[in-house]
Length: 435
Image (cartoon, rainbow, N blue to C red; front, top):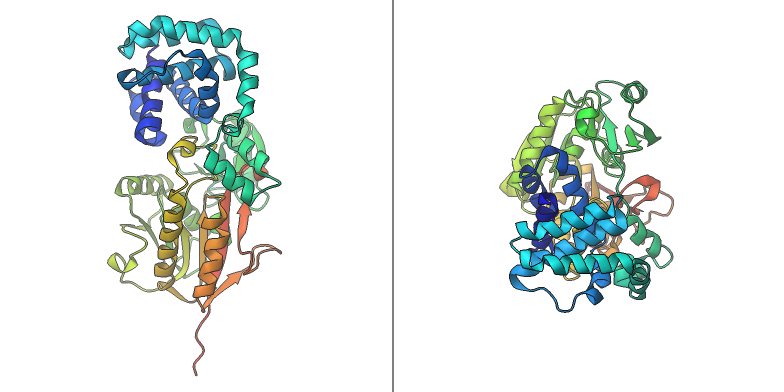
């Protein structure tokens, strides 16, 4: 009962107040028993994942919309419906616990209404779900603006992308090859009865068959591995840091890529990790400490590097640019409901500003890797194409046969090789020849 009430409050805060699930969920979990925390996460993630579909199913069952202080009860209804349609929770338990949660939401007068709506939904489940197929926003459980953009960008693949976004994300780990090789760690996983779905043939990544608590991962507290999606792990190998390099990881929080760069190349001259979010920078410090690594960690705006860096130019820059995060929706389903169509132009402008500013901090013959966890061309291919046109000393380094200045970069789609959606473009700074 308490778990459902907290879930309703969290989803209410996300949808109605625009707060992120990652900022709300930990505090909510602290208020309930440890044994119930996984269920709270499941209810919040699942209900937000299928939000517009659940809304369309419940709408014809409510005589009048719940307003004002009753709004959290509306989301309690969606949570109850999610349990009935998408989980293995016994229906009687889902119904009773959800109905009783009205008391904790100080809306016990709505107990009968919640009970009636959920029982009607249970009886009419098949018919209601068929009706939910009539509109794309309900069928695909995505906002209309996003569906339109994905259709335009990927006319042959849009359905696959939308379906991938609604899947539960896999758990990827990155083996710290400073400590042991991947084969050794695979043996340790097998001995711990943790099963592997696949490995990244080109790197240190391992995808688990089933997510588990990090405390079960052999040697996690000693820095023997880290949790990081397979697509994000590509950053370090694509940047290819060399001995003696000065490296900048811009927009670095929570620090996974910083650590991976250092694991990959132990003889760097130095590495700087900068981020504008002071709170998230704490995660960088924590991750580096766990892994026994040391970097220069700075709080600063990547679009204004002169305010935080007066040192030498960098040999390598990783720019994991602020973006719409539309490639990681399966990990953060609230993105669908927090992001707005109008946000994209603002993000594109910010990305361009950061690109131009950091380019001046790159040495001649240096390399910049532009990365986003977006799948929108405006932030990716079109962004880099515009940068190449306005930057005479920038040269594109092809990451595959079709990577050309007219169609630059490498776009990975959600679910491809069981990884998240990511974009990469590799650029070098041509040295000016003396006249």
